[in-house]
Amino acid sequence: MITTKTEEKLIKHKKFKGDILITDPCYIIKKVDKTYCPDIMNYLSHEDITKYPDYDGLCSKQMEKEQLKYYNDLDKWDNEHDDWAKSKYGFKCECLGIKNYLTSDTLYGDWSCTTYNKNTNEILGEFCADAGLVSVFLLDEVRAYNPDIDNWIKKHSWCATVIPNFEGTVNFIQVHLEGTYASTTEYWNKGDSWSDDVLKIEGEGNINFITKQTSL
Image (cartoon, rainbow, N blue to C red; front, top):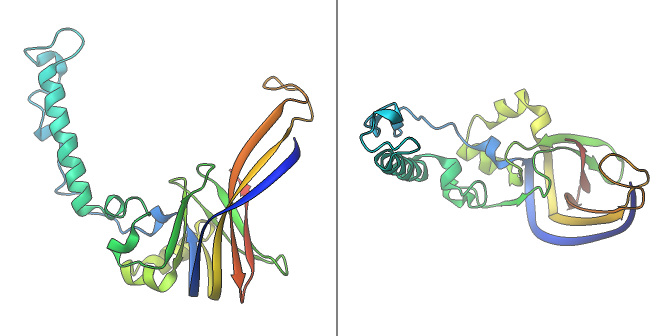
């Protein structure tokens, strides 16, 4: 692949002062006790669709109605009890007591990234995504919400970068790339054009850092 054009666009930025945490927001959410969440078996009149009196060989309107009631009640329960749903999947973390944060789609999906010191090229940490999202948090605010977060980070160091005592601005930058393929494969011909968008995170302050996707 040959890159012929690169364009960058700042999409989000925020000032931070303190230890910052870079990770997928799904990782900070406390586990929810689903003991009393709706159970679909309490909604269905029959486990076997063929047992429904209106089954026509393909479907049952009665079963569909019962399933819809279950999914509506489950959504309501999740919005009341599941912090992942309540926080709008990391985009509305104020309901968790977290006020200083940035969240964005990765533009790629699930990924693994490395965080580098821009001045020394030292590796500061790694992080990855399971929900196709990335956030930057103040670690103290996450600790106040989820006291187990430090133990989780110790056991999952590849999932989260912690940068201590950061003071400055964090930028989420959308990078648009265009180019041509250097050789022919079963999927494209040499000279065919391609384009892609990626997200990078840059910190500017007492510690200058940059993130790069380093694996899938």
